[in-house]
Structures are given as C-alpha cells and as structure tokens.
Image 1 (cartoon, rainbow, N blue to C red):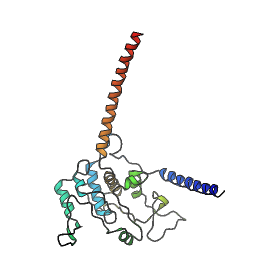
Image 2 (tube, one colour):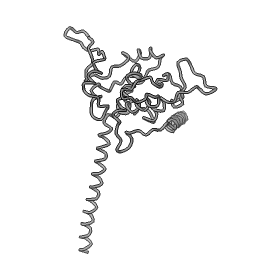
Image 3 (spheres, rainbow, N blue to C red):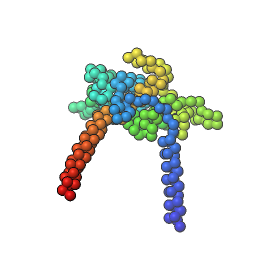
Image 4 (cartoon, rainbow, N blue to C red):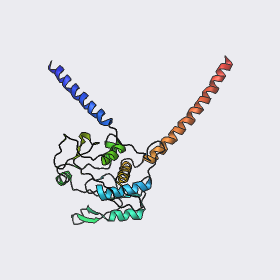
Length: 259
C-alpha cells in the first residue's frame, strides 16, 4: 500500500511538471522574420555586429559569455569583424593571467585567443551585486530556453506594469513573457541607449532583434555551414534515390523479359 501511494505521488508530480512545461512551450511569443531561419537561413553580418555592440554596452556588465572567444568575432559565419578590429576589442580588456616566472598572477591586455572577460569573479560576487539573483551566462542561453530566439526577443519586449492584484517585491519587475511573469532584471533597453556605427536607428525593437541574433550566433556559430551541409545531403539523397530507382527498374525489366 505504501509503494502504491508513493507511485501515485510521483505520478502526480510528473503530470504537474509536464503540464507546466507544455504551458511554457505554448506561450504565444512575438514573431519576427529571422534571417537565420529555414534551410537556407544565414546571419546578417551587420545585424551581428550591431548585436555585439548591444551586448558589450548593455548586457556585458552583468552577463558573461564564457564559451565565446574574441577571435570568434572575426571568423567566417559570424560578425566577421576585421582581425585588426577584434585585436583592438580584445586589447581593451584587462585579463588576469599567470603565474609568471616568479609564481605571481599579473594583468595583461586581452588577446584574440582569450574568452570574453567575465563581469564577476565568481557566482557569489554576481549574486551579491544583483540582489541575490544570478545573471545567466549568455553563451548558449537561446538553446537553453524553450522558444529560443522568439523567447529572448519577446522577453526584452515584455516589460509592463503589473496587472491589478499582482504584487511585486522590491527589485522585481513584471514581464508577461517571463516564466511566472516575475523577473529581477530591470528593463535593459530603451530607445537610443546605444549608438550604431552604421547609422541604423537604435530603437528598442531594433536593439532587441540585433542582440537576439547575436546570441543565436553565439549558441550556434556553425549554423550556416550546418545548413549548407544539410542542403548538400538532401541533394545527394535525391540523386541517390533517382539512381537506385532507375537501377532497380532496369534489373526488374530483365527479370520480366526472362519470364
């Protein structure tokens, strides 16, 4: 009897969790025409460069990208900054390195092989600076969230006044696309907060699109080559199918003739 009750208890938890997951997945997120979607999808280089600027000037003060190196900014399939520009970006950061010949740590300018510099030394420091909340690493954030790019884009656009009857603690904000509708991150974007070098108007929506595309690239840096490989595989399978069809047709035609 005890085992039966225990089984029922875990079954209820499983059904409840499944319902919550399905409910989260069925959220009607904002849609946009992403250039990287579909079999022939590609990243917009200018958009990735603008998105990096939004990340650097707005997001990087709290969110790390520990799996991305400076050199990735110059690689094919990404923002494709010039190598000189990326070297300048890397050198603008101070990197803690060592130990040296004397066994001491030292500070040096960043270089291409370095990972993006983290805004905090450790998790505890990040939590202490953000009221107990830990800003998640953005390297693969899009792949880790249900809804992907649409979720991140919607979240950036989802800040509203809390509906009547909903109370928020200090430092907590209402966001209609956040799980539970409560988020500790203050609204990060507003019109004109970043100045784009290419003359694009830095509206809140534009910056949301740009930084979302940049985060998509960070999570899937080989997306374009994967799409190309997938297309080639489909073409190969089509040709192979046609050859097999005609080969079998020829073989069976001989069998029918002998009969």
